[in-house]
Length: 284
View 1 (cartoon, rainbow, N blue to C red):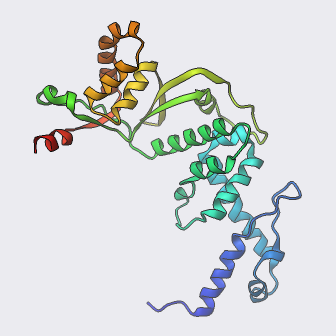
View 2: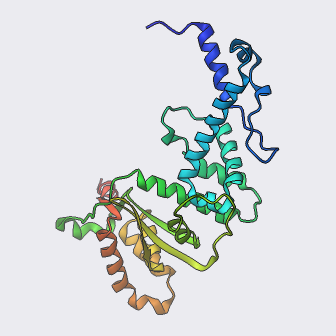
View 3: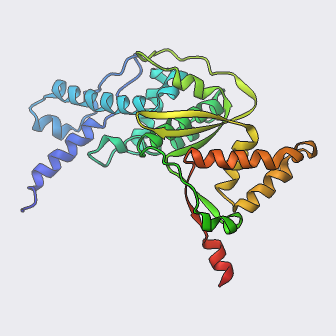
């Protein structure tokens, strides 16, 4: 297969540049600015600025729609107009490089958190974007499958690590964002909504991928803390760290609670395997 002629490659590059020209926001509506298109492209297309502007607007509106669909909670808190401003900045800094629009939102939540700067609701907005991104990641996974260690592994389980399932997410919530997210139904509202109230103390949730969507299950505070520790430490070390963090009067009932929490984690498919690698390294 021969390479495309140089003139065609140059025309395509200029066309792409015109499509990525940011829409102007000064008038309060998103407006194409054909005067910013490459002059060579305008001449090559016979002065078709109006038709190029149609493609330019469609390019941006399609990408805005993709990001708004993935980040509905963030849109709810910001309003569509302000959200599109952050989306445009992200898309200019990270233009799409794949034909698959599924990849467009990747990394937006980190970029957004940085761009918020001194916004008065920066923490809540950043948390909302992370929740939207986590929800998207879960929807791309298969349903969670309960996992249980084998009977012969029970004796050495305390010094093993539990491998998290990608179909289950632990969510530590400081604002009532999850309730807001699952209540978002119907047409999108363009006006920003007030941020939900901040909790007096963090709340823990288990977000579980199931057939047809994501289910959110409340966790007891100690249960959420334990499951978080188990993602980073052996079972023995996680239990020790949880006990050390408890008030003395709570420790007497902790063993029974941790047994219940561990069993519930297995039932819900929080783990997908047991890793005995640390033990093998120790033995060597």
